[in-house]
Length: 299
Length: 250
Image (spheres, each protein chain N blue to C red):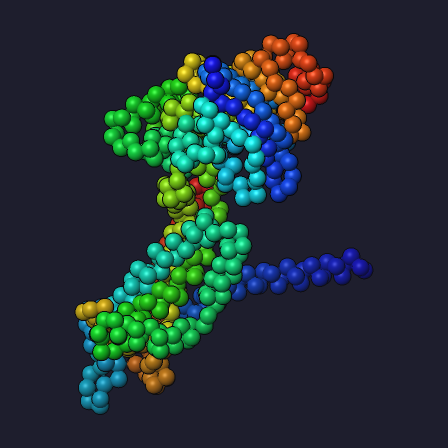
């Protein structure tokens, strides 16, 4: 009796674990299907050449006019803000990770780790606010740009948001390098800096790359902060201080005013699919890189 | 004749725990000195003091002196230079995550050697000295970590030799390798003795007997006895020495 009850309990737990595991797959599939289903009806009406080469994004034209679905500016907006973000986040993130892992004392290390995890948990709308109220005015002051909300401000804020992710994972990757490597290199008369760039970076290369890719993923998908900080202008930027608009910001801003089921609404889902393909490609790349780490670790 | 290397009342403690207690001895130039003793007797701590890699252990406190050519190593400004003069081979083989060639060229490059031709010469010489050249000469671009354990240990040795150190320290170098490789490295050391002072920490008593000119016996952080190899093995003054070296304990 007792035995069978224990058995039933075990079965239930097994079933729960099984379902939890598969729910991730199911959820992902459902999201993809939902996006595709919502986007599909408008697909035949989109001129794909225009979509990828034109900046005329007029999904809800005045009565009597044809709509235009040129998403080039949005795609470029996402790519450029992400690029600026990575130019900020990758060097500072890696440098901070090196400092925390190799140079900081034990106390300082704990302190930094906690602080950085806190930083990673700051809500994105707060970051957006910081971009709008703090970074923007400074950027405008320094560069003389008429508006504080632009590509540079958005990129800086995104960079600040991605950096904690990069620091945290890169630090783990550096810590995972066996101490024997450090001992060996230092015993050969290497300086601390030589140790870092000639031994630790190559040894942790894959982990560091994965850290950067995850930071990149965060930057690409971020919505709230860029909505507030990039200036929201549908154009291809010609300078760092031109306002831009990203895919995510366009979706967030326009979805509320697009009638459900209409072409505009569906076109926004097409943007969502583009974004999903972007992030999927990034995650796949990160996954392949991490797999590379494991395989090498085994041999 | 002054000693090449001298320890003077050298003590090491880790967070208050004594690992080495007022150890004093001298090592003549171009000789092999074996430091023997059971685990935790202080052998590794002693070696780490010689090239000041002990500096990296946060909790370690060192008192007393190590003199290299009569100069206290604690007074040396150029610690990196000291580590090139006093080479170190660790117990477990460590191929750094770079090619075989780059492993051996690492230290010369740090020292500022850039010319490929010059590096080629150094790499080949060090690998030949470590008796690894014939096995790896056709695959110098292979990742060092891909070599077998015994090969990696000889790679570690080649790396230490690439700096042409005047003192070479080996910490239990044979712990992770097979007897054949061990014997080959022992031959290498015998050969090296003509130019280099060698300090060999080992808990293989017979290895000490085969190789050493001088034996330092440590037990429980203290120096028990020091003497030339013949008198240590045949006429030890201390009972504990004769029991340990005779294989009765340890």
